[in-house]
Length: 237
Image (cartoon, rainbow, N blue to C red):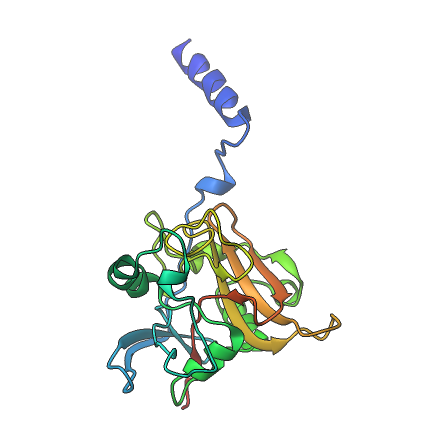
């Protein structure tokens, strides 16, 4: 009788909405990088780590180089420009973890020698190396189911450690958390590839979400949003 009751309870639990007893509880298999190392940016002395997948070496931290010394290029919005945005908080808590937020032009300018802003093809190579099918990598919007092998949160650690750092936009001046929108919920990363399927100036990016296993491949205008950046280089550099 007790065994029958246990089975009935298990069936009821698995039928409750938003509770998974199968797919969501499956153990994620992490793909071990073929190589690892460190890189020191000689411009400011910052140290970054990298991992190698599919013949490419990817930084495992969001980039932190400050290019605001260039008068014609801003890579992130000055803290004093945002209501409730503390420069001290940013310097001590946010920049160290989430890095700087860059326009596309800023991301290209901040790139250290020997590295590059990843192309859409670079991203697709990474996604395939981590288990996404080739047909899925070329699709737009949400595809694949490998974000848990790429995104690091307090409950999930990965080798490449993409973060849900949100983004900064010039269009919105309210409901900000330390100067960023959707920090902890979404992560946005530039590519250097123009979206030729759209008219106008649009560039492809990647988006991760805290509640999705898929990864979004979409495009946006390169000037009004500031996104996180990871650089990449060929393993045979």
